[in-house]
Length: 226
Image (cartoon, rainbow, N blue to C red; front, side, top):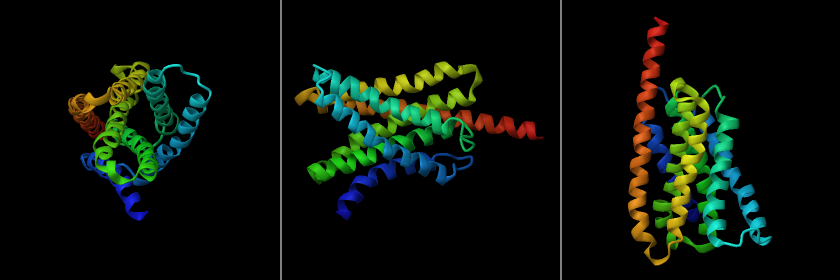
């Protein structure tokens, strides 16, 4: 059991450490990030319950609508809601890059519990592929969502409402494409690999941009302080 939990949790911690260590100005308090991670973990159970109820009631007549459209929207909406309600106005949300960290934190909390439940059910045979695909994809969805959240909070010329909308819509769109590719049958790996490469490129571009915005904000504050 200990080995299984270690294998399930390690990918999420490794990915989060990567994004956390890239911040060069001042590190976000670990307590705030841990709380966000726990919120993400707690999200797993109401989401699974809602999915179970809808499936048992036969609300959707199409597997595609149920497993791709509805699942993507439900998961990203709840993560976005937690970031908006709990994180957006928090005192520790201090610059655009913090959005990256908080977004990755809530997403990896969700992905970690999902990964634990999957490995408990099906064993560790797919532990590596899950680390490379579902866990990392959730992290990157969270990074993208957090990037636009940071812009909404700190970049006035971007506009708050458009950026909050993009935070949800972009993460949902990426998640939707990912789920659709997972359901594409025997050719899915040929499609998922280029998509994951694109997803990493897309997310890391926003990580770099968020870092630049944070440095610019820091410089402006230093000049004002003088």
